Length: 303
Image (tube, rainbow, N blue to C red; front, side, top):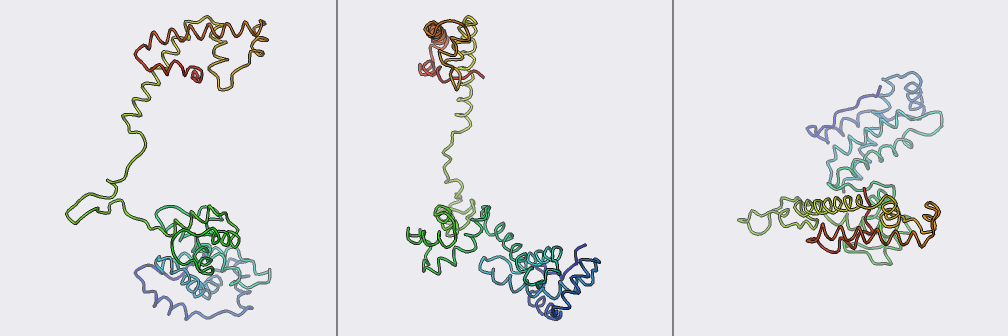
């Protein structure tokens, strides 16, 4: 069972919340050890409450360092509190260090995870390197006096890459992402009387549904013609042509000559004759279509 904490909902005043948690006494090392042991070994909820309440102000202190991400402070504090609860569940007082030393990493991790999921509508920071960049790029840019949001110089990229141990490409992508802002697709374009929205100005460069359907129909027609043409060939002609012309990895003349126990030249002759038959049938059945289809038989696979 996880110990409960004070409510820090948006309706509550943060100043009042801070004033309340300051009333909880700080713990000595001996008291902290005792309460942690009681919670870990006996599941003593009262001991866990005292341990949590004594460190609520630590969460607030850490949360305020992330205010630059323009997210509600009360939500940052709430996420930090969740991180502290996770720390309490895993804290082992017998290892000899204070709970603060252990909890600070869980609190930061919870707050950072919340920021990564809520700072932008576009998901970022999915890898460890990206998370490191997200929370440290601005700081390192300040150290090397790269204060503007423009592209970084090759020299600056090299310095940041060395300091943070990430690739230059990842630095460039994250710098562009942090310099940009999310915009609604419904932003009005033009003057006040113009109801046109930004999304109406975006161009879709992919083929539309009509073109996709027409392309599918054409490929289906070609496939059917090819299938019917193949059925007119003799079995050995069809097999050799399939192996030589219609496979991603064509068989060699040597391989087929061993299978059919005939010479390589004979295999080549059968292949050529079968291909000519197939091409003539397709040209007749598809006389109104593009001649390029007949030339593409070499790369066509029968499904």
